[in-house]
Length: 432
Ligand code: 5AD
Ligand code: SF4
Image (cartoon, rainbow, N blue to C red; front, side):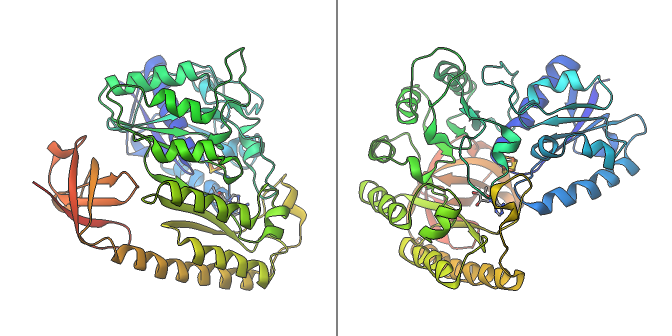
């Protein structure tokens, strides 16, 4: 009988891909199969996120729950970003944890598995050329890492401390991986990196300097590949050449994530983001001029230390000017070993008020954008079965749409007319 692996993945798409990597290694080298039930598992992995404080707290209560109810012989491993930043403290606080494996070290999963109390959290470890085995959650679209780590010094962000310095994966390996998934039937790839449009700045081996725009051009030549998405690009690196390639290359999906963080030039400076309010607005204008159908999403942090009412008003101003299609908004959360950790915090009630003001405005903008979608037609790539006999998919510009249907639709493209509007998902009908 095969051994069973239960894996819980928190955080971002990079973490999802890291989990796939670990599943692949454990399947190939150790014969594990995944299970949805942790009480049935021989190995329990939590792939953690540390970008804000809350998930870190949650980790220890969750670990306690797993420990109480797991099979007595089952091992528990803590992986990912919290593993990188807390290291052996995890085993001190939860002594039943068998090993700790950092976000930059997932290729070592089958080594640490056999060393009790191993703590493998080397953020300088270079796994940019490691040949992972194959495992993919979805047969229709494939996550592909293009770089590891992050070289930016944003003062709020813990990621450079958990994922180390930025190293790009050679384009030849990326293209090889993309060809393989396309041969396997996937029509969409999703390129991943902390800062994708800084791709090519540093490789570990000697190799031709290929930048992100050129990587996109090379990938789009792959026959059978229909859609390319990526996350996250940085507004600072959005040069004209990149925006023009994005706009005019038909294989690149017209959905851009532009993490604003703050609309105030002063706060952006304190955050060390490298751009101003004006630069951000200028890039949005260029993008919309070149590509009118683009949908733009963003991340915003409210109440960064020192954020005044005027600074917050600048963020609101950018929101009103840009009318983002989607906003992920967060209250600032101080993180260990970051520059802003010791900055004086904004009063927590003020922070909560700002977040709820921003979210209310966002809902209004969102409803206004959605109302205009009724009756429009989009080409949808179907990728998931959902409840009550519906299948969901995404338009090129990342609108999630469901239609009545079954399995045969999965992995196919159809033209869909929007018939009903909802906040997270729209309903449509396939056009004959
Ligand atoms: N506090 C709040 N939000 C943060 N993010 C990153 N670090 C913090 C922090 N310390 C947000 C940013 C980033 C997203 C992934 O998480 O908006 O883009
Ligand atoms: Fe992803 Fe950042 Fe969370 Fe790490 S800390 S899992 S890189 S969002």
